[in-house]
Length: 391
Image (cartoon, rainbow, N blue to C red):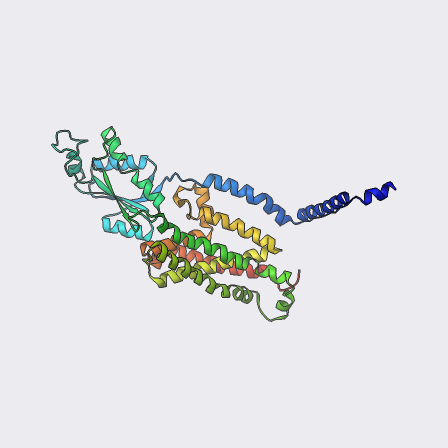
C-alpha cells in the first residue's frame, strides 16, 4: 500500500522523469568533448583575449614625417611628439604630396609636416618671442600641420590632442587656446562622421557572419540528413565538392555587398570613392576566404551545434580584433598577431581603403595576396580532411 502511494504521486513521478533526462544530457555532454571544450574555452579565451586587447586609449600610431626645416627646433618638436607615445614616426617623406600618397596607401595613419620656415614662424610666436609685436588678435601662421586619415575618428581624435602638446612642452607652459599651434587636416572625412568609418567595416562583419554560417554546417548537414551515401556513390572528388559547396553562396555575398554599400550611401551619405571593379575583386577575395573558413569548420565539427559554436568562436574575435570597433594600433602585439590571422582584418583594411581613400588594389596587394593564399590553403585543408565514406 505504501509503494502504491509513492508511485501514484504525480509530482514525484515528474521529478524522476526530469532527473533521468538531466542525467542523460549531462552524460551525453561529457562524452561530447568538443562541445564541452567550447563551454570552457569560449568564455575563458575570449575573456583573456579581449580583456588585454580592447583598448580605446590609442598609442603608437604609425605616422610619417616631412621635416623641411631640419633645424634644432624641428628635432626637438619631433622628440617631444614621440615622447608622448601617441605616434611612432615610421616613415620619412620628402614632400607633402608624397606623404598624402602614403596615407592613401595606408602605410601611415598621419603625417607631421614641418615647413622650411619653422624657425621664422616660431620666432614671431608670442610664446617664444615676447617682443615680437604680435597680439593674439593678429593672424599668425600655424607652426606646422598634421595630415590625418580622418576615416578612423578615434585615431583622428588622438592626433588632434597633439596640436598643442609639443609647443606647450617647448615653451615650458600651457599656451592659450587662441594661439595658433599645429593645423590638423583630415582627409576623407573632414566632417568627422563616425558612420563613414562604420559602414565599410560593417560590411566585413556581416559578410564574416553570413558566409561562415552558410558553409560551416555544409558537410555536417549532409551527414546528419543521410545524404553522404549519395556523395559517396558519385564520382565527385573532395576538391570538387568543396568548390561546389561555396560557389552558390558567392552571389549571396555580392548581393549583400550591394545592399550594405547602397543603403549606406543613400541613407548615411557614405561616399564610395574607389572603383567598383577594385571593390568587386576585394569583395570576391574575402567572400571566398570566409566561405572556405566555414568549410574548414564543417569538416572539423561533428554536429551542426558544434559548427555553430565554432562559428561564434570565430565571429567574436572578428568583431573586436579586426579594427571594426577598436583601432588596430591600440591593441598589444599578441592581439595584433591574432588579428592578422583573421580574414576580416585584411578585408577591413581593403574595403576602407577602397571606399574611403580610393586606394588601388596594387596599394592593398599584401592583404589581397593573404586572402587568396588563405582561400587556396583552406580549400586544400578541407579537401584533405573530408573523407568520402561514412564515419
